[in-house]
Image (cartoon, rainbow, N blue to C red; front, side, top):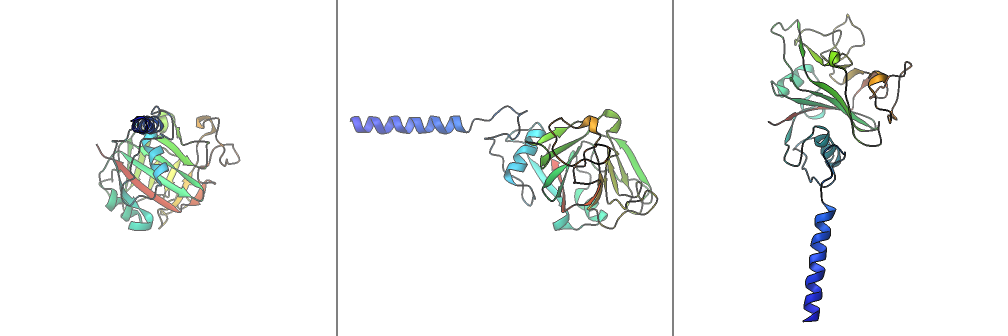
Length: 232
């Protein structure tokens, strides 16, 4: 009987230990240990990166995201991005370059202009984030309201030499010249973040003006670009 009671007590202690060990920390803390979120099919994000992204979005273990587009899977042309993303919203753009994993959230989605040679400018909630390579932990980077907009080129147009401009500081399909046509590869990027908007514990690269360059330099070719949608 004593042996049986000891075994029961040990089982109870094990269960309690497991429950305590998997208790989720507050949502504002990242990464959110113990959420046990499952990355969507076909994503490039690791389980820990996905968990951190859900936390930055203010979600929990029931918040579903779906991966709509990946350059390595669907192609690197602008039309590939438009065809796969469609009118889904809100969107999360994830960019990978070497050790860096970062991106942008836009609430309004991608809105193509009626004129395929024109562009469409519209307001949207916009903020940056880093999942790896810039801070001791995954971090959300708020930007001023006047930068919270998106400009999307038509399939035969351009936005200052790029395909998509997010917040005026991230250009996808960037050709490196304002007057020229966009680059053929959507992974050609231009990005910087004003030093005034960068949290103090930033350890990534900066340009000559002290502004953060999340891709390691202002102009770079991403290893991968992925677009996910928050399922509502």
